[in-house]
Length: 585
Image (cartoon, rainbow, N blue to C red; front, side):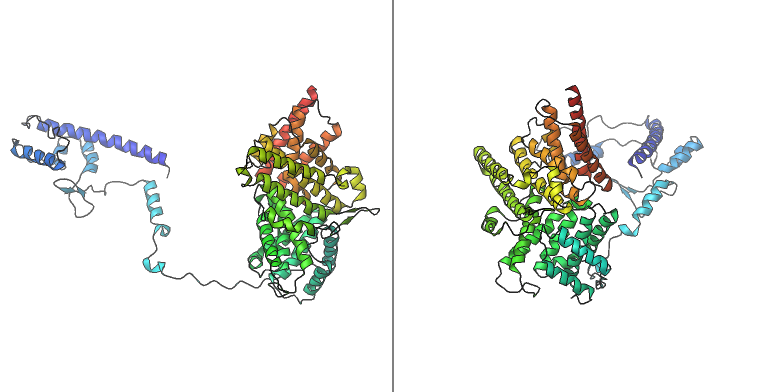
């Protein structure tokens, strides 16, 4: 029942009853007009501040006792029969509602008597019945005291999980694509080990643990995810990647509580990669899995045992590779989400020498050229950790502005030296002729992580060294759009120039780097609009930027990502402003 309806009905009833009471008082005054009055003296006179309340009550009682008593016939003001006989019968019937007589229950207590208002003549409204029925509902009845001591029902044992494997031919094909398209750049599994593991699963000899089956689902899910980016990929592959992620979610509790092992860490990283590569990545849940994986694999390195928590022989070399995969993802997420890293700079400073240039390389499509993607990613992760520790961390806020500016300049200089590698000197057309599709995806992803770090540091200086502002979120992007000079302009233009030769749209690459893409668009649009005479933008470049906005729109349509929609709308508005500025020029 609405409060407005209650107020209207209560107001109408009050007016009607007040009118009737006034008529009753008028009748009583006519009867008592000729009666003698008490002495005209205030019953409660102004007293001293220290006078107790009891003295006022005694004074009132004394005045009543010594005053003259009027000689009036007995008249009960609540007995209206004699009064109503002299008035209109209709008025008398209405006044019966106000009759109050003594009963044994529900009494209204006054100074000298106890009376009750009978309710048998009052017709409750429909809203009253509705509210009364609601309050009498069992949901409003408190549980008995005995019920509070009862134990909850015993949980039934979980049903046996029915694990699924794709047909052997499809499973073999997915394994091959995983090893050649994903594992070659980020060696999550030893190829021989994961191949033997899947062979055991298909033979029905798996130990049935969640780690064993999750490992298989990670391989199949990531393979479908990569296949969706190829020319032959379809939406079915993206759906299957989500399917395997859902299968992993079923056994997530068992995975998190499994004994610490390399297999557990690999599964946690695989789950994080599936999350961040899909529309559900905007919830930022992948960071929890990466951080947990990093802690577990770090704890394994502190042990001297020859076997892990699952009783299997340890592979120290593979543990180190998996550690760096987790570390790379952890630092990248920290830059984008404005969160601290799991490990500080001093925790990994002694590990930098373990990153070998030839650890993992990607071979060009033609010729002997090789791209050390994994080594470059690990080196960039160390620079990102330095940037967070020396510039963006809470510890850096305690330093003087000059020290922070000097530290920022030093990290930026090291980042520029890192960017001198020959892979960053090649244009989009050159890269498209040298690299396969998957390797090109990793190259664009590496360029995006580099720009994210450069942009983050320049935004820190532009926003008055306020590290609490995340320039990848809408409020931070809006503030950066108001900056006239963007020092990351050239790097933003470099990143956006690589998009035409890479897979694009509602695919895993764009879900991984879409915060970086919106930051690059804001940087380029804002700088070009405010400095139209200093930059040159060709019609082909404008068309490419418009295509990127269309790709973001497709991602918005495929998800319920409010943050992405806001960022896309901001970029579209800046693009319109840039078009007007170029027309005026």
